[in-house]
Image (spheres, rainbow, N blue to C red):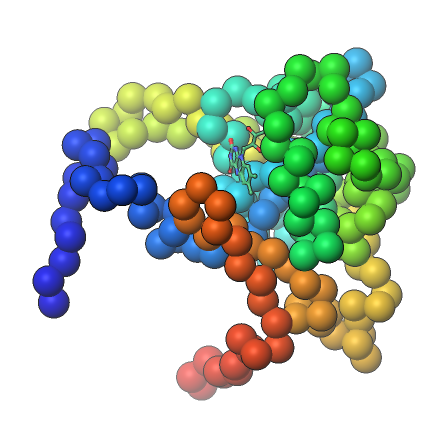
Length: 204
Ligand SMILES: Cc1cc2nc3c(=O)[nH]c(=O)nc-3n(C[C@H](O)[C@H](O)[C@H](O)COP(=O)(O)O)c2cc1C
């Protein structure tokens, strides 16, 4: 098989960095947090995933020190909100680089709804939300130990809201929820639906 090989530190030699198109499509960490000034903040992070089942732990990477990172360091709390197809434009508008005093809920026309266990509000329009308490903030480093200005924020999910309409006989219906996922390039997203579903059980 002929391959395009490159060492990332020397550039990829392609029209667009393929890295996040390959590690994709990724779920979006649509993170709400509260500043110590009481102003709610909302922003998407696609370097996001789940890392543990019991207790549930999710994490996202702040590439550079951003408002969300500052808020979660100050308060130790955040909320993950599910980004769906009907919320795609609103989600996208919350990535605008605006001053910390700007409330991205208002900017995106979304409703902040009080959480049950943490002070950060959740997105009322989103059908699923995880209330999280920060467990670790890890600054990333290169293989040679040099630090990178990126921080991985990990949080224990202490409360979960699921719209009852997405529970079919008690089973969460991923396809019906209309999740959107981030691909690569400047603008690629994917949706998932029942057509993409296939089942495969682990070998016994
Ligand atoms: C779909 C999407 C995914 C993004 N993923 C990340 C990410 O993983 N890490 C990051 O630092 N910025 C990411 N961004 C950019 C941030 O959302 C943007 O810098 C935002 O202004 C940060 O907001 P804050 O300063 O309020 O935290 C992403 C933007 C979009 C639209």
